[in-house]
Image (cartoon, rainbow, N blue to C red; front, side, top):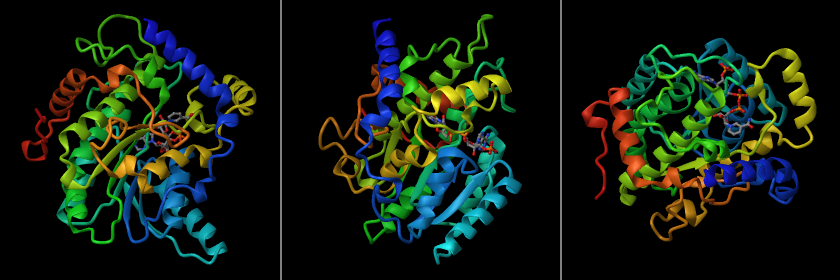
Length: 349
Ligand SMILES: NC(=O)c1ccc[n+]([C@@H]2O[C@H](COP(=O)([O-])OP(=O)(O)OC[C@H]3O[C@@H](n4cnc5c(N)ncnc54)[C@H](OP(=O)(O)O)[C@@H]3O)[C@@H](O)[C@H]2O)c1
């Protein structure tokens, strides 16, 4: 309970002080390092933080796959980014691919086709996400609670199916290029009092809160990142990190009624970051040569997989780093998404 109140206080302080605290942080263009020649996948690039992340990786000469649930929106984005590039004398390398992270069949099709083509993969940014603020409980096509399915279980399966591609790329990477998984989580994970393992999808009981469901899905993302780091031997060269982008003015409030959306935007605009400011932590974790990202197991800080909006390693909630929860979550997720045995990573003892 004490941790929950602490989390609430810490989020409130974070929201209202972030512009001040982050005023000396470099702009998106100046953050992180090179991704020249890298192949990157960004999920949910059609709006907000994902758009800025994809655009910045492309500006640094990466080949960027815009993994979207609507090809039409993806092609519109590709055209816009090509036009932006042309205005600056650049020709971004972009590709649109269909991927609905709320649908296991779509994820399997995407990842297995990537595998079959033996494509390199340096950076996977699991950015796509929903926050159905104030909405009633919904379920994905696979029967998962909407937030858990879209924000966590889908990205879990995508990451696990693409991991062999990342590992192969890391082994062949002779130019010190980064090989990373970046999970775009949220500080709101601190408000989740663990995960109720008897009711992970909020299927039992009458009370449902979209806020609690969102927070739980974001906690699952951070706990998964920590467990992935525990299971991935350092020699693989693949680094996983979870990030909190800050509180960012995006379309994330799209499910609120028009009037409430307007009020939210009006009241919060002075305190929120722009999408480009919010993309800094994702781009930092995807590209930086910061030893905390590259040297695994060197310090306890390095094993903390969570980066705040200031692009610094921070402590996530104690639940996120609990190895018991991590182990349970891994087992539960593997069963939920029917992860084939050949893609499994065993627990380190
Ligand atoms: N904004 C914040 O203050 C904030 C704070 C902490 C964390 N975050 C996290 O940051 C990430 C990006 O959020 P944002 O604020 O940029 O929100 P946003 O503007 O609503 O963008 C979300 C993106 O995810 C895509 N998406 C949603 N469901 C998808 C699905 N099933 N399959 C594929 N793509 C899907 C959307 O695609 P469509 O265009 O097709 O809808 C859109 O491109 C999310 O994970 C969010 O939880 C945001």
